[in-house]
Image (cartoon, rainbow, N blue to C red):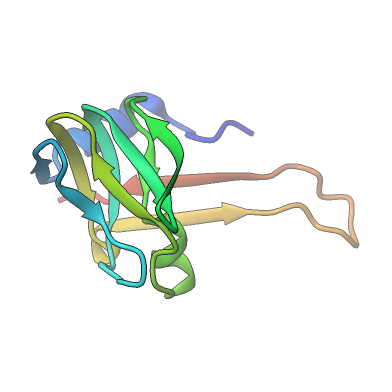
Amino acid sequence: MPLILDPAAFQSRLAALPVATYQVGETVLAAGTTYGRLLVLKTGAVEVMKDGTQIAEVSEHGAIFGELSMLLDQPHTADVRALEDTEFHVVMPKACSLTIQLPCSMSRCSSRGVSMLPTEP
C-alpha cells in the first residue's frame, strides 16, 4: 500500500493549508515544547539538533516535522532550526484526517501504510 493513497489530492489539499515562514537561524521546533501541529516542508532547509549535536539536515520537499509529538501527545525531542529561509505548510490536528493501517501480528494482514490528508475546507 502506498504511503499517500492519492498524491494529486494530497498536493491539492496541502496547497490550501496556511504557510509558516522561518528565517535563517530561526527555531522551527524546540525540544521540550509541544506545538500541536504538523509542519510539511515546502521550501528551504532545516537542521535537526539533539543535545547540541546536529543529527540531520533536511531539504526534501514534503518532509514532515512534529508528527511524533502530535501523535503521542509528548514534547518534541529535538530542535529544528532553519538553515535558510524556509516555508512549511501547517497542519493543525482538527484540519486533517489520519488513517493508519499497521501490520497484524496475529492474523493474515500484511499491508501497512499511513495516509494523512488535510480534510476539505
